[in-house]
Length: 608
Image (cartoon, rainbow, N blue to C red; front, side):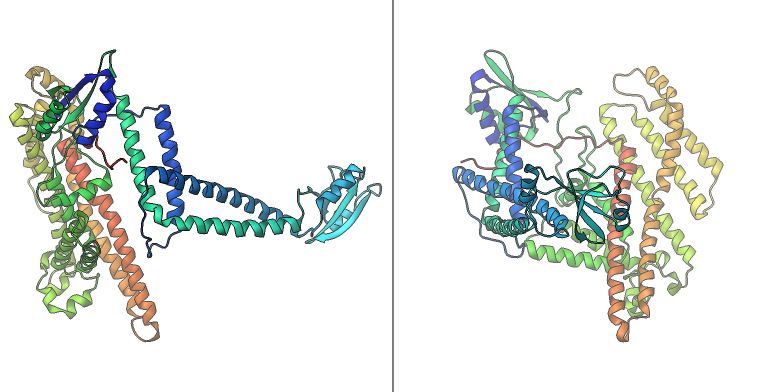
């Protein structure tokens, strides 16, 4: 990245921004500023978004309508009309809801005209209405004048004349409504009819959905323009702006500046700057982009690009966690279906292809097809694909379950050791050209990880190891980390050494953490085994129901059970598969994923 400054005369500031937006080259950091123009745009955006959502919610997704193109002037009239419809619908819905409550409350009292009661009150005859139990009614003082009314449900209804009931009487006051039951029922029916008419009018707005979407994009672009405009710095005569530019775009930028007669300055990015990150994927590796987009993770500008390794390990983790070749076939079918529907292989489709094939391969190697041993027995050619030592059905190959599980766990620890060691090697290769002596500390971490691997094997798998020798090697790595961990270019060796010595206890805890990081890769084995066990449980539940009249129920159990298992497997990939890449591996690399994605200030839609 290059840091770019553009300087123009003060009165040309906004025109410069419009030309810069058309070019779409410069990334400009903007603050969440507020002004009247931005607040007005936000209000308009919310209104249009609400109208579009209201129209879209009423549509039949299977029968899309042909879309109309509108000018900005015509769109303003259309938006105003549909905004009025929305407001009318809201008022009607509120009135219908209120009237419904009133009708339910009045239905037990019957239809009467409240105006007549109010007329009596004006003439000096005030009536107060109550519901009361028969028992409490009998206890009323004889001096209280009341008129008996028709019962309301299981309660007696009365109207006192001239005064309210004393507070000690257990009765419920009924307050006179504004309108009578008959009037409310008629208004309720009329409002419902009118609401239905408004809903139909809103539904007819389907042909404007694309026009609404286009206007939303225009408003988004206008809001960003205003925010960038707030980033302009100015004196009485000059105004300027600063942004970041990929080095490969420098020639385009200089040509643009020359053609518009802008004064500019290009400078290298300093350590104090926080430039955006432009991730360039190697050919074939861009399929991992949907995962990063979903996670919302961007590497820092000065951090390693691990997209290649992330894709490789994520694919392996996905395959081991899902762990079933039958599920791999389902994912493969989904990829083919999406490919056919979209008529092209998008990055998401290609990612699903890769993950499904990897799952199919791993499931074949472990002999897992929908968690069913019967399938493996019924099709002998599938057994030829199995590696017996990691099979989920080792008894078919003359092995014990413990031996097979130990091999899979060992494989998980090997993966963990390789990935964490790779992080150390990447750090070493990154630091050596910078003459950063802290690369020696990464050598120390590499030594510790390789040595701790054998401790893990002894504790979990039971493989013998020379513990004293291993701890001696770990001690050497630990000393290298303490001595060189705080070294950096320009830092005197003694100062770095003393700083590292000051973090002695933290380094000790991090060494223990390195051991636990290797151990954490056992989750690949545990989650994979859990998935197989769940599949086997549902197969067992359905096995006695796959014939006769119970066949539909048995099929339903299989479908629901395996669908649930698939969903749980996908959640496990997010929780465990992604975690191993973003925490254990990235943590060893020292990555914090605090990057800002490169998003150039650009014109996203054509303006009328």
